[in-house]
Image (cartoon, rainbow, N blue to C red; front, top):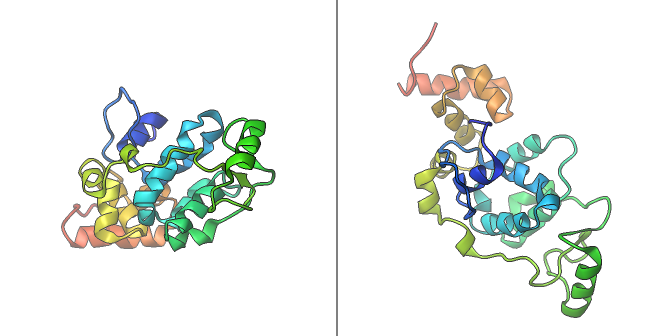
Length: 214
């Protein structure tokens, strides 16, 4: 899973409709891409609506435990809102990472959004959460995101999630297919412990998908 690609190239590579002059990267890491995008919401207002649009369609394919590990000990502040929206979309595994921000967060000018919320109200899924999201302030629409069958054609990580489920095996399989040479490299790429990396790597050798070394 190549890390030397920019954010918009990553977003396009997981099926989000953004302008990117770079070619799509077939092994673009979905959980890593989402965390990088979430960390940049404060600098790019458009990202929140794009992420929410993606989660609406594909959020049930996320390995929530892995997403949490990639986010680190201090999760990016906007991750809690993404989790709340996932739950609103009946993707209940997001409950594991629901959190409140330390201070009120809103996407854009606070005074403008407070006035807008007073006039139109707040989104039901964010009300009382510590995130101020006025109704209709975020453009959440399917047109920004590829459908599952389309995304499976351009992203190996997503395809493996469809095959294996939203779990570590899908992530480990993708790392192996992208060129990881041993279980240590797999574990580092996947942010998982050595044991599952070794077990799945051995399964791939047994299945004849990769050659036995040493």
